Image 1 (tube, rainbow, N blue to C red):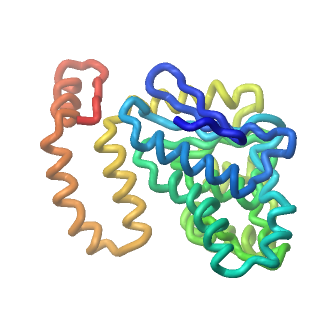
Image 2 (cartoon, rainbow, N blue to C red; image 1 turned 30 degrees about the horizontal axis):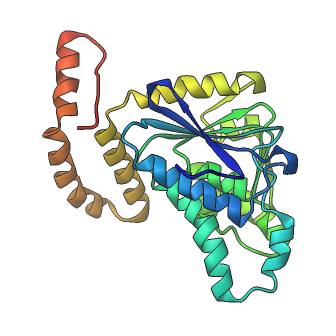
Amino acid sequence: MAEFAHIRVDRHDGGIAAVVVARADIGNASSPEMLGEIRDAFTALSADRDVRAILFAAEGKHFSVGADFAFLQKLTGMAASEIKDTVYANFQGAARAIYRCPKPTLALVQGAAVTVGCELALACDFRIAADSAMFQESWIRLGIMPPLGGTFLLPRIVGLGRAMEMCLRGKQVRAEEALSIGLVSEVVVKDALAVRGMELARELAASAPLAYATVKQSIQRALESSMEAEWQANLPNQALLLGSKDHREGLAAVTEKRAPQFRGE
């Protein structure tokens, strides 16, 4: 994997990888270069058969204080073609690489997760928050709209009314409220965030890879289509899973009363 300037990729036992944003000196503020690295890291890990689950974390006090303000100021003078090559290629590219990743993805959020940081966390399958966490979609205060999928994902995760509060008022949502509205799965004290994240990552890594990817894609497709389309897509996907070695291993494990050893085959 390529060398990175703004992030690092850590490898752990059991097929766990961690993409860690490493710019605590600037509150992990997002730049096109940083987002391009996140995109490339998730793309590479998605294709790595040895990786079974991916943690998305950040060093320092904050997950991300948002987009780098100097970059936002540059955007005001950019042509549409330039914006496409930066915001869409790098910023949306990172969100897409996370959202479409076939493997389990888990964001570990401490401190501020503002604008870009909030939306990248939303793109993950699961989110665990430290008790210091605060989520905010404050793009509207800058006179622009969420570019990374927040207007699509938030209503589906927290409901229309709460999404309107976050996107149209820029409301701050702190950890306990985030838990109560389903924005995060768990809240833990900050010192326990990494340990709890690793525990859940190991649980997810034990899932049958083919089934996990297929069910995840099915859920995402259901958000973007209709029940009829989902019924039509279910049969060929289920046929593939029923013929897999993982399915046979799952049946054997239940029969033999042991933990399954899935291999993604």
